[in-house]
Image 1: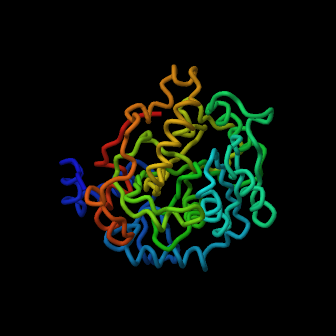
Image 2: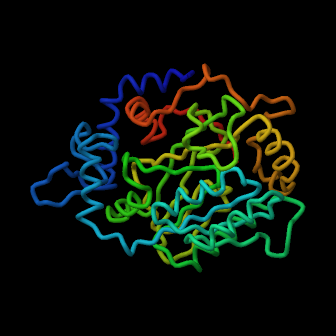
Image 3: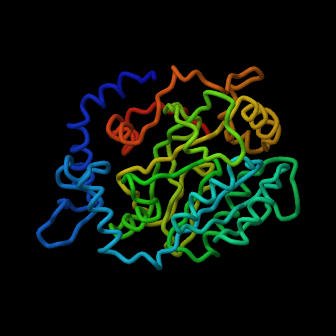
Length: 351
């Protein structure tokens, strides 16, 4: 896997940079310093005093987080709702939704009048899981994909649905907490208890290296080859606390969430992106289901440019020798700084 010189330098200096990130967050007033085993018995999962014995990924940190969730905190009444937009995602929609409901997160789907079985699969899940679905726009299929209108609908839903936290994500995204073995919902609870109300994410883009993926498979388990050359915006603030006030997402095309009193958690969570699942899927998605449906008014605003470099004949199936293989423990150690801060990742700034 190719990495730029800055990324290589940061990894070589990780033991120096990581403590500096902690110090910076503390000196800026983001949080107070906490040890892995403080004398007063209280534990702050936000920032460790010693990076080697408290950083996300460190065994001591993992143990403390799990203990905090299991014994020190009662988050049984803590309600998290994921707002998912979906269009022709029949191959992964069931697994995508279950990855949330299996950890106690409720799901509301804005189904954009898919032409495949997406809507039927979601309505079936809604009969037995904490899932609700609405077709959008309510009047019926539109000629264009109106992303701005969908974001406006999600902003309205965040005022109407009762929840402690909201997550906005696509059906092809899997969101992961900074602590291995700790669910995303439990991690949000710890973020909330630490006094923060917004979470940013580092994107990892996964690529198909064959055409073997089939409908109903677990995409997170199947696709293992990744890079950081994602197609999206550097800001991925897609989780926020319901503070009882309006939010704004449209100005950033949904990549950022703005509200008064926002405090973004200093460690980024991970966003695993599975845009394309095979050569055929990529061709269908990009050239027939996306480019052909972009709203001209939104394009004029600079939105929907992330597929502009892709033309007929584009190779969606990548060579496995050109990508790194994702193995969680190795990834967390090798890309510690990139994962938690986003520093050193080359990003295409597109909407």
